[in-house]
Length: 156
Image (cartoon, rainbow, N blue to C red; front, side, top):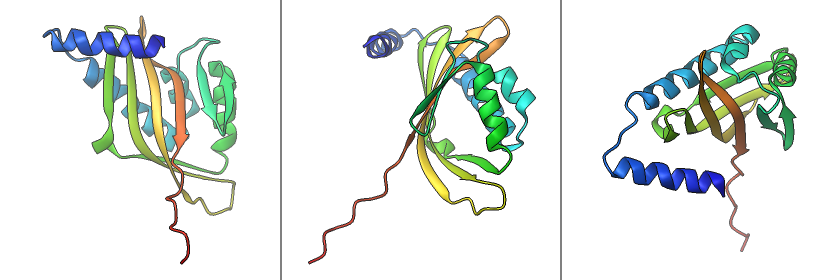
């Protein structure tokens, strides 16, 4: 409910002519660095982009991972196999909630596979909350939602 109210407040504020200049670009640049670090399997670069908080949340395969350190350990394990993110940047949308918080949405293709195994395409809808800290913009949560396969018509 808080997110809905914050989103509504942001929309009303923007429609009143108050723009959050530059936040969209900063959030997009943070996401671009995140994708590059993920695809390079660069744990140090990913560490710098994630909020250093026990409240950092990443939901993966339906399970919550709380805290930056726990998330980094999981990423290190995944990096042993195939782990590639391919966002559809034409679908990327940033919703600015206030001058220190934004939400990012993008369609993204994951290629995830164990070492030596093929990595099939897995489409997701990626949602992230990004917050501004003294050190810059940091990702506070990663909430990927798998896109279900298209429904097939019943046989006649």
